Image 1: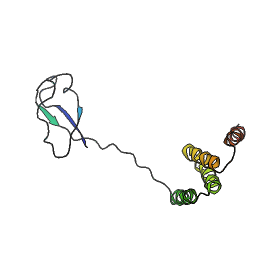
Image 2: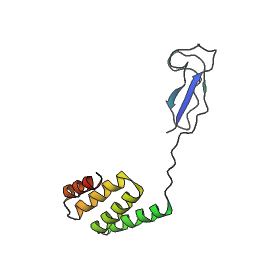
Image 3: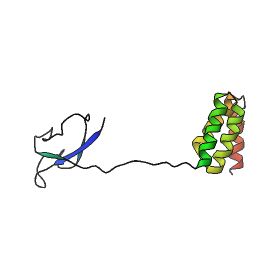
Image 4: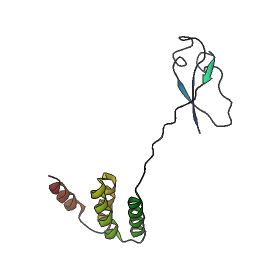
Length: 124
């Protein structure tokens, strides 16, 4: 469901504290645009919103590694998945991938606490 922004269409300072500044309304696409402030009834207009998005680009190598890790995980090859994730996490400095590697080490039967301690010592 899209979020639309509205603001008072009157003179500066007209309207209530809600519509003097831009405010957001959750509406379905089929709903008609609001014409009056839901709080005070003042005339309002729909604003053109800035697009706010995040684009995350992965390198072809990271995509390949991700697919290989998933393949190992789906095959139950936890130690292979863990080692690949751990190596790649170190290379690209990705903490979430490191956490995934630790989870896979644990599934493979390794003592994750000793691995974490070893990791802390090597980072000192």
